[in-house]
Length: 234
Image (cartoon, rainbow, N blue to C red; front, top):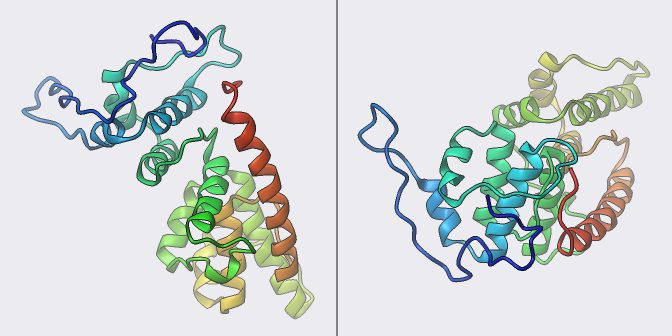
């Protein structure tokens, strides 16, 4: 393996945009997809490094002695065998040309949320321009979220109902579809914000959303600055 820890060794991949032959077929296959390998090879070197770091931080054992990347010809296999949350992270990095590694699904959500704002030149809260997912898309994304994020979504639903009727009850996961389908636009905005930014905290008002988003932004900017200078610690 090529170790990033050894600063005297050459980078494992070219600094130029390059091409790379498709991985060979597996046993019993006549051909195979290599879409992600192609995206990886077409990316800038800084994006490739973010991809490799993300794979490592997602899969490495805790406190490794060295920070090792997978081999170049293992990228497609790693992607094919990755869980959905890691695939989403790797697609985000390559599709958006993102140059900072992400450590888990919550981290990917926050980085992608603020990347979207930066790409649109939005410096204030992004709630007004937040894509409102369809009910089916929202539930599908909810199912893949971390438990802490799911809890924040459910607690936001509970607080909304409490403010209307004075009854607090956190709904079960299977109730999310019906709640979302019946939700007014403001609640849908809140729920999409919690889910898309990966919040572990429920919100009770749009002011909460703006305050938490400001805090998220500051924390993420500090993390990105550190990550762009040092190796991940897992």
